[in-house]
Length: 219
Image (cartoon, rainbow, N blue to C red; front, side):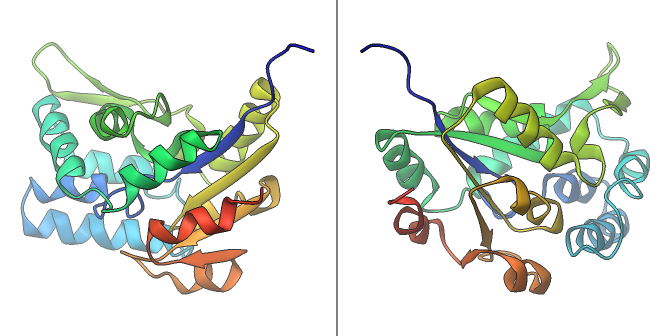
């Protein structure tokens, strides 16, 4: 009998998972050490689950006011700081029948170069808007990952659209951990940011992507 088999989705967070950096923090770094420290502290508080994502999302961008030229700079920095095992693990997973994707609270145009390098077609992330001179004018405030519960919402949409046989999520932050009830396996990732809440509540916890294939081999 013919027909297309249901896909198996292997979904990654991007920041501090596929790359060692946090894109929003790197955009802040361009504005100097004081702005960087302020934004970094806000990012960590949200990723540790101490404050909500929505309480800092727009505020960080208003503080930074990134320019279009910075998008390309940070996009290149993602590539320079790629998780060492990411390419090999994703290539092997694809051969084993998995479809890799990214769901991020970061920014689609900044993440795209890394996704292209890894051969990841689908990137679910937030769009940024600029005027003709490259000045920041805003972000997609309706996008789910700008708020708490956004990543589970996107996974529910993907399940409705693609009818996957399996869904695995890999990430380092509290917003990733929120997906645990909606996936077959949630894998906490602690190579760059070892967040205690994520380590404690993950179904599995790894410190390098090289550990991932053994966890998904029988799914």
